[in-house]
Length: 200
Image (cartoon, rainbow, N blue to C red; front, top):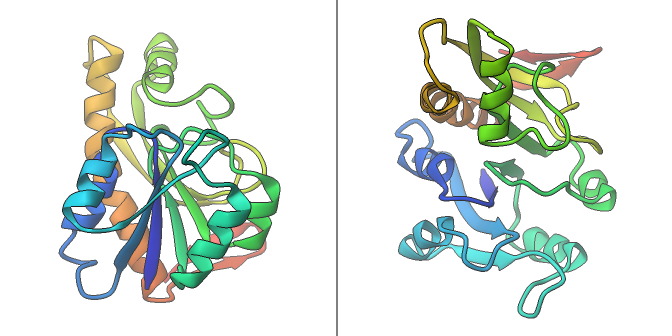
């Protein structure tokens, strides 16, 4: 299975995918896409000689229409948003319907939506005095964080003293469940029944 990974930051989830022993024989990262020309994750991509695409309206960037063409040429089977902070255009989502997933650093449907990314999420969780947090992998639809949930994992945060501590614990969980979800896709073990996502 060929995948493209969309990132905006340092790419720790991209690295987790690349490092996953379970994915090494069945999943191939073919492209890394970012909305930032200086995205730190591009260093990982360059080290692995992966295709790099900068998406947006700036000079040297490409449009989503051009990206669709490029990803089709690469025979991409699944698009993984791994810390990508921009809302994906509806046309792009519909073109790859059912083939785009996202990792969110909280237990959706709580603590999701516009502006809820990175430390903003963990700060909201901390200020709500929540005792558990976690990560969610979900399908991407036309709005932020509302697609069907594929898998989640909880983490105890009852003893934390800061949002940064929550972020550290949740990131460890992200690095576990994102490769797991990708593996299940590669094995054809994810299906939708009614409003539920089934993992075999």
